[in-house]
Image (cartoon, each protein chain N blue to C red):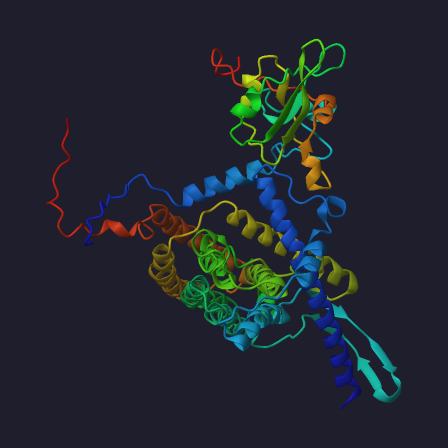
Length: 414
Length: 174
């Protein structure tokens, strides 16, 4: 074990602790934010009794949840029932490990620590817990594991509602996994790399990918909502239909874990949207932030935070605006709209990139981005024009007439 | 569908999903900056004119905990006629009549169990002396259950406004 490796290990542990703490505290505060935002949107005030402006409400909630009784349904599958919250909680947190949240920070130290020996680090430290070269595939792989926790929770509870919720979650999350993955192929085509750091670097050099790849962004966002089971797609929970869906039988801290998992998933999806389509920690219209430095790291971390917070707010905004999809609409949106759309869009982007690079011969990344942006505007107008008509999401009853119904005739006019 | 559910063709020309979503989002966003309608209860009280009482007030017809009105000498107006326990649908009024040496009837015991009371207001309606009233009042917390049986002294010493009840000749209270 060389001193450099020990230095790397030390820094990694510090980054892990910092990111974990920030996410956990952030998630706690997000529950408050959700309640505040929902209150404001309904002309209410929201929690404002515990601490200044209700800021300590999450602490009170946490304390309550720790002190409450842990119930275990009599016929439940005991170990899976206990395991399920952890299984949905872990992937949610794991995902954040590969998301770069600031410009690289220069760290130089060289010290020895008694029996542990020498710790050395020189140069730039990437501000990401694990700067995986396959970051992007890691995200797709881990995000699909979240469904196990939810499906298991539904099954292990031995309750009708929980089982239905679990089934719905399994079908929904597996369905939306597909368009989610496919919607990211254009990003790969454009950046030519699967490492998230490289994708951010590419966006710094050209445009933020939301402009040239707006449809990808849209599909990713919608699938992200479905993956996190947030409101227009909260069918696994579906309060009005399934009581609380897959976590009906859970109480106290085990329930809290599902809650934390949901919010950490929201944070992760928002961070992914930011990273893949909004330049990550990039500060737009300036190249000052791209050289590493302490000030740059702080500024870019702040900017990353602002972008992620905007998307978190957006998620909440959607939640308190749209009602829940019906189940068949959800499925038809996933399989009949988003999947063909993302496949077609891959073709369009492939052809466009070929044309731009080899026929038109544009090599400047900004010019290339702009020409793709022009295409994306046209395609988006077409797609949203069709989507707006509701051709795909219409009611299920339209195609069929009752078996013994009389032949179609003009309504009697009196 | 075997049971012959009537299936209506949905309108396909004038539907909108994307525009409708954007419109809804604009609406919810606008609401974030509107005036909050929540009354901050312990600080603002609807019965308290100084703290938003003008803005948030109970209806004058509100039927809350009872009040016994008194005459100039401080005696209760009740003549122990027995109509209120008679009409009370919840049977929550306990009345033991008494008579003084001049032949005036008065209640020896007059107790209302506010837990049994359903606040229908019949006692006020039926009272020939306008003695017992339901009140415009709702803050009734106590530390023991026994305290909810209001005796005559307690009923007489309360000062909150009395309900106007519903007037059939003026159904909208104008």
